[in-house]
Image (tube, rainbow, N blue to C red; front, side):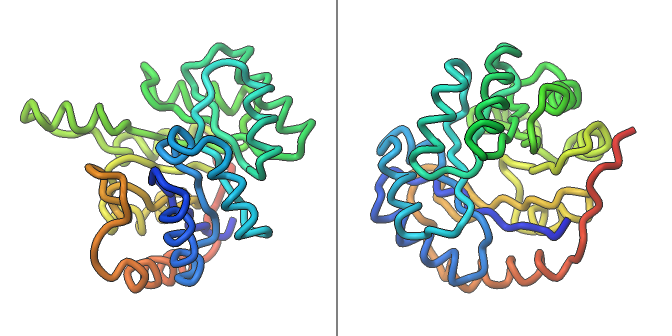
Length: 236
């Protein structure tokens, strides 16, 4: 699978999200994500605005579905999302409903293993229930809370190889990665490279980061796209 660069628009206002998306697309980003803060602040208006501005670009709606799976997937699909996110901690019937909605509505389902008691088991459960992708995700509060206590922050790089080996579907690694780590994820069998807080978004303020972000994104996209095919489907 050719590597894909996705930017997570973890912003709270549509105009800034659109401006950041425009910049990201110029830099070579492949997929746009309507991040959870944007959906909470603007609802499906944010997804619709992205779809209107970028009619041919894949758009992930990161609502983190926990219940009402078919209905939430339908709402996101009607707004223009091409990928939706369901949580591994949801009841299996919710995950099944989102997966069925994906089949009915022609969208893809990304399963997020955030807060799974066992990340690898959570990833395998998501695939077994029909998700098209697995997101190996360490949460914002989890990372910051542990760091505040002076302990080592967990990282998506932890057990990443095990997650990749456990499933046949493409994997993302999300949550506190450095730029260097994010760029390196294809080397670990991860074809979906996600850029968000704190790489491109100020994690404390949920606004676009300062600095020459476009130039940095161009370099990141060049390096990721130059990697070549990423093997997918090596489940052990």
